[in-house]
Image (cartoon, rainbow, N blue to C red; front, top):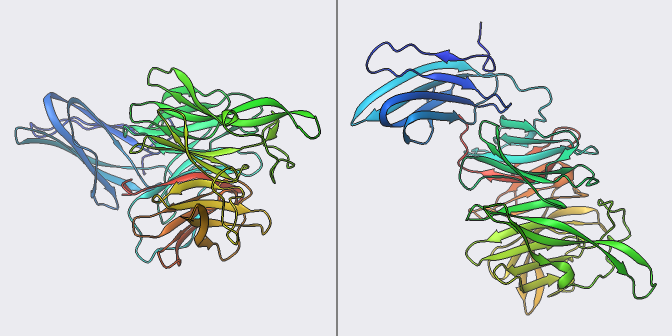
Length: 446
């Protein structure tokens, strides 16, 4: 009978001087990982080789220690895993090896369906926050390009996960989490170990959408700033929702470093009359992306409802450049920045965004060139089935010149080659959409 990973703990008896006493333990926190541990009398270089299907082609990082703990990542569900642990001291090698079986996926895991497959699938995996449409019940998934789920964890009840990132120190994942209707101020940024255990949880007052990691171990997030505003024409006063950037230093001290209220004047936009996702007031700017450029020490802030992308000097809080409705305009004949998400300056002159155009009900990736003080469209990709994302979405340029596009609430990810041909496509599980996704080229998929 096949032993279950969830209940199995193997203790391998030491049979000779060249064998280690190893213990294999499944994660106690729901993540589909296993930890192999052992102890050596003196510091040794420890590593574990492992894999599925009888192969051990995947390895953990080599760590010098006496207390060894190696997490096996990327394990496929319902499969036999074979491993060999090695500890080396002065060219003397001790080993232990064995096999175990992983559990099938739980029924609640929202596995994606691959509808277009690569001719030559790339190594690596997708890290994705997925959510149920309507309830925003969220999961964190890592899945490969065949659609095999390699890591999963479910968020707390009534919590919406938008952004998830690998931690800069390599120890696990960091994700944000909010009330699913933004009706309660319970936002946090949570750091998880690769075994699924919670390492830390940082409250983020009125936090929302994306966050950023800083090289010194600090964090930054987008904060809602709600103020009363009186319309100069109608003299009507109402609550209006703007945005700020807050940094958290490694000690936990939080400091507001930028606020749109200090720089912009409230202007009606095409989304002001729509029902706000924020019960606190009229959704004016709707910040939906925050990115840190370490080389330039700048922030890139996307204000979706305001149709504006800002570059901000981190050290001074001064605006370096603004494009869109509040800055350098989009040229006549090019689609406006209407509700853009995930902007990236590919270089000094080219801006890539994901946008959903409510006049045509078509979403996609749009690349603009800054020419004579205006943004001119030079490339776009829209899905052949004319997908429309009511919310969220991403577009990212790849090293080979291709682009992957996340269609947000439409629940599709497409990877197109430099010739704009779809080479891979994933559909979220029925009733689910994608929040933020990231491609992890080095994630193991044994």
